[in-house]
Image (tube, rainbow, N blue to C red; front, side):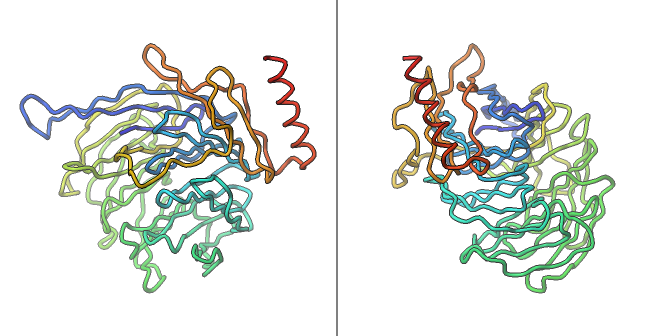
Length: 388
């Protein structure tokens, strides 16, 4: 597995985690070891969102671009440049689709094989602050700075329902079964039931909430502008337990399950990423599996799980050159201007692997006319000929 975290310093960090059973065989005392795998300075502004699927990691930034990393090949696969505003949220659904939201008010649906924009929806009058995909993949919820909660029919790519809320929400999240969802406004969490589309209860946290993740259909982990993480029961609305996770505010949390382990990962402004083993009874605080210091102000978090290669699934085609030159990354631009395809290999270091090719910056497609894009492309070709 690979821990992936974005930072205010514009850098993305990757750490491979190796579970190490103790000689005593005591699972409670098991320690895991994170090993630095790569760092990459791809963006020109702080990172704001991370998403993972079975093959790719994507990062969004205040520089208005989305960068794609192929975790199987350990290369940067390219960049998506459709949005005109900070990328606020990224969500994969399966191996085929990515959905992005940004401060330009758009929600975009991407083909995660060809990396083409399939649909661009004017979702909110203000910013899109967060979105969440229903487990069925047929619905999505989004919240924005226009004080609305919107339901989207992803099958038809249209708005299904608009609910006016009193304040601007900044997080929305479906439960694992999709029978309920939560909407976060400042330090309050409204719990909605899908069958009634109404609030069944409200949870109040002590500080403004920065991230939530469901640990089960009824238990929600909550992090905020403080060192503590809390587990709440969404039915009884009571706090089951709380524990000090970091020395500074917790910026993002993520949970996943592998055989014999249910794991919570936390990232903080103190620079640490920590992994916690969850107990079966969520009233018991989790035990620390490992921690690693990035020495950066972390902003977002993801976990890539290498679940093995499906022999039936073909590798995604690259829109750029078929051959990869490790000394000089080659860039090709699609006519639509939505995708800048680029492949840079991971260069091994003494301790880390560093993604190369920082000199090639993606061109924002929406801000350039077709004629200007052709001029840029011609200039790139001339530069390469001169170097040769």
